[in-house]
Length: 297
Ligand SMILES: NC(=O)C1=CN([C@@H]2O[C@H](COP(=O)(O)OP(=O)(O)OC[C@H]3O[C@@H](n4cnc5c(N)ncnc54)[C@H](OP(=O)(O)O)[C@@H]3O)[C@@H](O)[C@H]2O)C=CC1
Ligand SMILES: CC1=C(/C=C/C(C)=C/C=C/C(C)=C/C=O)C(C)(C)CCC1
Image (tube, rainbow, N blue to C red; front, side, top):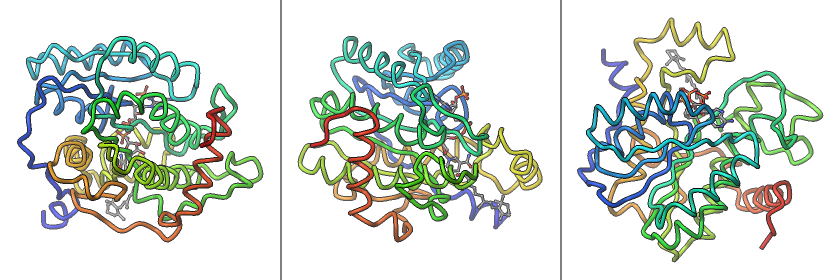
């Protein structure tokens, strides 16, 4: 029990309520995202469940509405493996909503076999990094207009094994499913830091998060990981526990001065040397803009 407690510590104790606030959570039809969306709805926010399978999303929205009594839980199609879908989501959202106060870039894939997104990006870097990079870019003006507002990027402890190799960003020369995931999670942290630098003074702040080791569908592509998760299930966080650090970063008052930092168990935590490299962060930003056809500023 003591080991279990240690591995599942970190609770968002903020009591803030969110009437009139608008939040978008990607990949909120299951796992950590679903629990994050549920808590935001519980506090009265209008919550957009942005997911690739609208049917799954609708079932979850009904469940959250019933549990929280908040009817303002909306489902919108967002496939992060397709930039047309990301642009369509953003276009409709911007037309529909006056504000965006909380963006949780939560969706993710782990250890999938080598495959490409609709735009030809390797799946991990394409969905986990480039998809969220484009989404954030498209929603940034709305976030600025709604300030104070926040962007939370769900990364991982796995970033420690990641490396940004600009000559093999798409796994074209060498591919390992496990490492591809780690690289994409490192990209999440570098993106957060560069975004924080660029948003200084705008009222929009951003944080990256390691949610802990959490029982979810993330391990679906790996027999070994599924087996590990089952074997050690007693030590693994529930999705509700896994959502705590995302919620902490989205809700805690007075966190603005820590914009750009990485959090685990609701505390600032250390990141790898490459994750602190400003030159790599800036270059990754420029390369990402280039790949996505966003003008580099
Ligand atoms: N679980 C863990 O131990 C850890 C998780 N994390 C991170 O937490 C985040 C949430 O993961 P978790 O809840 O555990 O995993 P789940 O697999 O349970 O949830 C992932 C979510 O991402 C969605 N998703 C995947 N691909 C796309 C896509 N192309 N477009 C839109 N949505 C997509 C999934 O949708 P669908 O249901 O349709 O597949 C699902 O809703 C991830 O970023 C992950 O890297 C980090 C460290 C540890
Ligand atoms: C060693 C060990 C564990 C650690 C697993 C870790 C460290 C998993 C990390 C997963 C990540 C980072 C996934 C996604 O990003 C368990 C299973 C808790 C059980 C006890 C033995």
